[in-house]
Image (tube, rainbow over all chains, first blue to last red; front, side, top):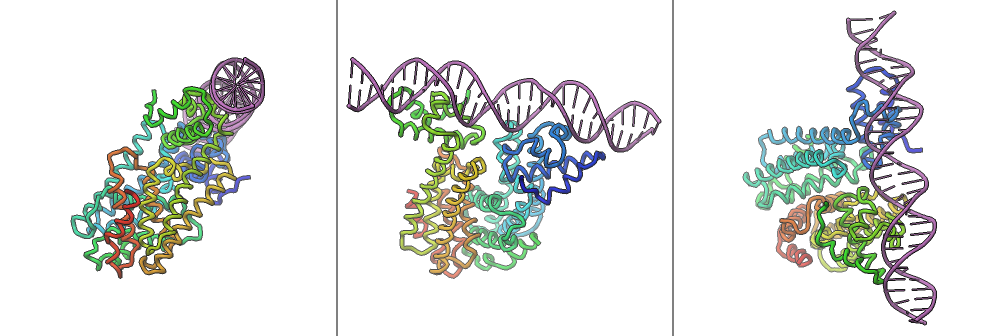
Length: 229
Length: 229
DNA sequence: TGCAAATCCTACCGGCGAGTAAGATATCAA
DNA sequence: TTGATATCTTACTCGCCGGTAGGATTTGCA
């Protein structure tokens, strides 16, 4: 008897009657599916599993999605949309590069702590068909390039030490992405202090030794943590 | 017609005749399997696939391994053995904690750049049966705790700034682990300069602001890079 | 040389899971 | 009220894959 996540109950109830609500029901499927894909994996979650969780049968799912892959693709899309939107606002701000990076880290952690954010990182795009995989990887690459650009900004304005922005971006993204493997929302660890430590360690690592006034500076953390709220 | 990795040819040739060589052939299976599990995933690599790659048939594989899971478990084991051995020698050294961390990073990257090291990180232990998964996770946790202990050493000897060693260990391991997702041995990127950047950024981030003499210091990088060689 | 064990093959089983066919029932707009 | 449509179900198909039965062939030691 698999444990029943309380958070999934409302979606289950949505399918209790046959009232017409295509958009809402589609969304409910996505929310349920992403949860299950994260717990077990995509491969080990059958369409029957998802359907059962929602109190319907498998063919009913095919009324809302053409196939299993379409569900996964839309989950990816929702997740990357979150990241793109976040980057939009980070880029728009007029701040030193190092501060932008700190803001990015805090905001990214916030996104990762949600289901769709975690999905972008944890779900294996090798499960996808070639064209879909290609599209997903292109979006991931675009996000990576935007982070590199921010780091380059910081090197240009002198707030970030000279380095290969490509590798630096990998280090930053990697450190945070790994959270998706161990952090569980609702667990014992405090997301706020986690964020603080990530921002502190990584922006210290990036910063120029020449301006220690900025490095462990409160303004950075303050700005970053404000995004976390 | 799937591309044939040149590195797999020797293993293929091992099975060309029926000369008795159980240990060698077992090992050949592991090397071939880990490559294929990394390229496609474990779930998407069938026993037939592995057998075909080795120029034998599926039942022949079952002469060397009881089932598919046993292959995966042994791959894990070989990978974690590498990491454990590396930690043994790091811990044995008499150095400041921060330097040990730097050495760890460099050595870990070296391990990650090999197939079995990457496997420990990339292969999804949710594919395993419950008991096997439990064992694997216990080993992973042990490795994590050893890294935390090194960080605590550094805080005790003053080379590392005060922080939550649990989170710091996650940041370090995460940054490096992520390499397994993008680094390809034999690719254009130079492993030596990658290592240099990782060590520099992360040990700078860990270090106390009070002793900048150590932070971007050459001795750290030198010691760390010697391990890479 | 003979024979026990190791190596490997052909031919199968059984289960799981994605996806579909065909139709029943409920909803809602007119 | 009445159809057109949306929603959902039962009952399948079909291919893939892990694993096995049973036997053929080779190896290398005594």
